[in-house]
Image (tube, rainbow, N blue to C red; front, side):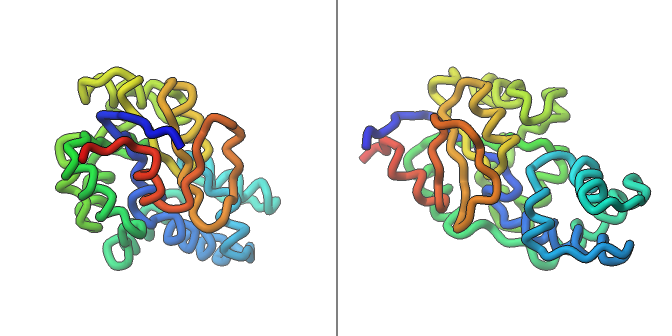
Length: 221
């Protein structure tokens, strides 16, 4: 396997560095139960694609032929996920060890998130990952562009002071992976133990776990 010499790793946050997807889907599942829709957790996760929460809620309502006020549901979804994150959110397995290794090797890192910067910073703080990214959190609201559009990835590279060729991008969602590919950076798809969404790009490298990224990188001795 040919190693890749890169100087900057751009990470998605939720579902990539922090184990938030399961908690988000638990909240979605409960909200649906309260309006009379019973879905298994894995069925809810099929619709969780990294997009905006309102869009995900709308997709679930359409898929279940249910009529409800998406705006009201979204406000409650945000309130409940915020509370659940504070009590239960954890880093992804091996996230800290990977970030520590990259820091040790002086490889720069940043976050590219569709979420507001303040929310991402709070999530990283809860999970103990904020010190790795405190001054390098970039939001779709900063770039005025949200994944799957590639501009946020371009924005990250520019602000970190690197060419796109010097960067790689890691994301767990199809929307995020699409942004990386369209941006022209080497992109990795964190799939975990099961693949719910095929990213559809042959050039994207799949990762079963975060530490698999190290086998692709040419790390200094």
